[in-house]
Amino acid sequence: MEAIRFIVDTLLWLMTLAFVLRLLFQLVRADFRDPMADAIVRVTNWLILPLRRVLPPIGKIDTATVLAVLLAASVRTEAMLLLSGVRFGDPLLFARVTVIELLGMILKVYLFAFLLYWITTFVAQGAYAPGVRLLAQLCEPVLRHVRRVIPPVGQIDFSFLWVSIAISALLILLR
Image (tube, rainbow, N blue to C red; front, side, top):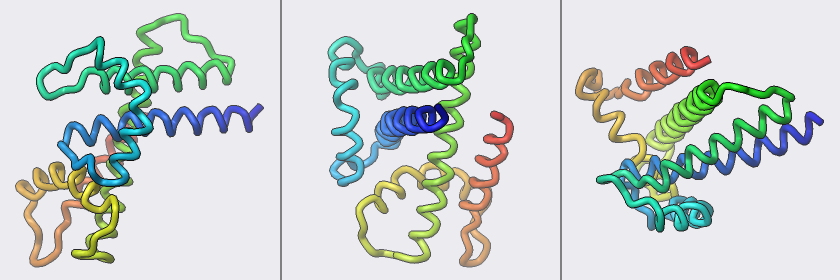
């Protein structure tokens, strides 16, 4: 039973991750011509395109993608609860658990993205690789805000460190 739970959780986590990445890429106006971003679009179009026919965007926010993220997170939460034998009678408690899990996933995505981006700035400075520009487009808006408050010391930029500490603290609070 544990193996089935692991497989179902992993597949639903990957599906939710794809929708979360698409939403984050849309929010930062990432270049969707990047091979990785294009793959995310192709993997998530099966749900988002039909939703777009029904849900118009609100300003710059694609409501179809937001709903797809919420649906994917809800399906994952419900599946994990069913496989664990737990049942929530309160829909507000279910929504709260789903939102907390989703926020945790978004924070972990950013933590991992910052780590990868930090490594690529040291290892492959100026080199092109698929996804590096996408990482920059995802991470730089957050890092820019931190650099305004805490500027680099000499030639060393500590913004990665401060953002990682803040995200880790937020993940502890979500537990």
